[in-house]
Length: 541
Image (cartoon, rainbow, N blue to C red; front, side, top):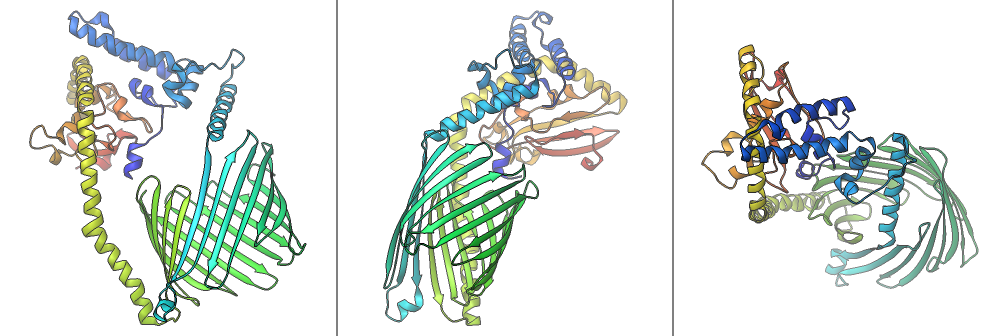
């Protein structure tokens, strides 16, 4: 599990965790869970004033959760918008009586919020390409062989209209050029849109393009453009078909001075993406493909190839995510045009690319060295420089977060321990009964920082790591059913379970359980949002 995935999970599930029910639970299951918790935390059961106060606080939490989840309208709002949607006074109106109507209305409100948000944004993007050449530099010429700059600013000028302004500049050793473009987009209907475009400079033209969704899985785009330089006309048609949730294909036909037909496909999954295209023109042809593999949320590798009448090359490389907004990538390219290193840096909508020509000749020894040298340098730097730096930075951030949230965590852990105190009698009774029957007994359970939930990380008394873990043996024994089973639902953050708390905000969390069943010992560790069902033979040790 990636660290980001361990931290970020399905939203708006805290109330389900509190009642210990699935997000898909029926009304009867919610009612039954409420009754079970109400029997434990009803204030009238306790005479001691302190215990009565603790019971009252937890009973109010249970009642609030039940009030929301047992009301169909409130539950729909909570599932989509969370508590914020309920406390902000969101009203659906009396005319909405069916679940489908509620979903449609909530979806409409969500789209309105997204539109309002997009209206307030002015989205810029740009690319800078600087071409460098070692052979030319060694021959006494300039090291920089050319530069290209392109930028675009897109804005939502109304609910149905967008405006994009763009420009580019290209200079080489002996020539240069510039161009500017304007594109006006209009949403004709939910299934159709149109774009009007005009450009000046190197490729002066005027054109129009329309797109329509033919069905749920297919769309068609038709474009017409006329050159302002020679009056030539280009007609283009593109058909796109979605084959699955992760794959689609397209066919493009262009009629004009440079007629062509192209067939392509794309596939994108959580850990990989791939694409390919075959293009046939009146005077050229080409085949291209690429494959990208993501090893984690921060790093990936890429291999690509191009073959045709004007290109023959193979490209390999990889990249790494530096932050939420920045990514760097280095590629090694070998082909008929020479041997290249390519460096890329992306931040938001901005991109800088630096292709460096190393050699115009395909010398096998030089080609091997050009590949091995940066690869070896990368792994050496990663091991002795980059990784130690990021580990140090992560430890520093963790320490700052620990100091910042220590008071909040102490209060949350104290509240969790008070909640556990009221569960103690029933939990011990259930535990003793399971021991007599040879059933499921939780012997030890730790919840908290994923790196510290194991017993070996808990030795040495109360330290920073130990304080990022809470003992949840008692509440889990309480949750064991009479039939000797325990289930924690998928997609529900475990810190919301009664008797639990979040001992390390912002850190990935896990739950480690040791238990006995039928005289045998078992052990299992699961992530914060993973499903858990015990006993399981696969957990036996």
